[in-house]
Image 1 (tube, rainbow, N blue to C red):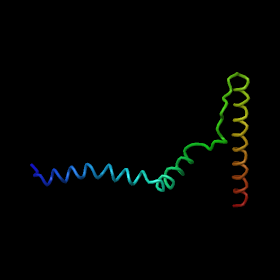
Image 2 (cartoon, one colour):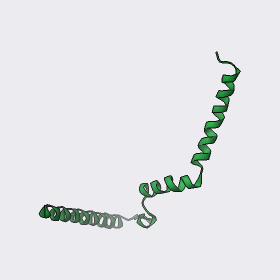
Image 3 (tube, one colour):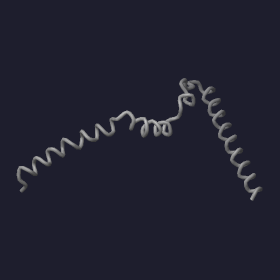
Image 4 (cartoon, helix red, strand yellow):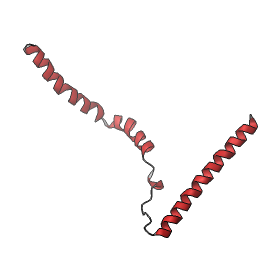
Amino acid sequence: MGGPNLEIFKFSLYLFVPIAALVHFGDPDWYREHVVPYRLKLFPPPDRTVHRLPTEQSAIREELERIKAERLAKRAARQAAAAQENQDS
């Protein structure tokens, strides 16, 4: 069994660790440096989000067609770039 010194050490450690974490992770500079860039990677920018979701079936189909067209355009651009790269090699 530990003596009073061990108990004092454990108690001070139990107090110090959460306070140190609060001071370190609660710093606004740390938040701006580490959290904000990750948030921008994780969530899409507000201009790319849809604020009004379509509720009618025709509007949903139009939105799906628009998404498919964008996807096909991106795929065609990638394939064209790959073909151009293969011709250069």
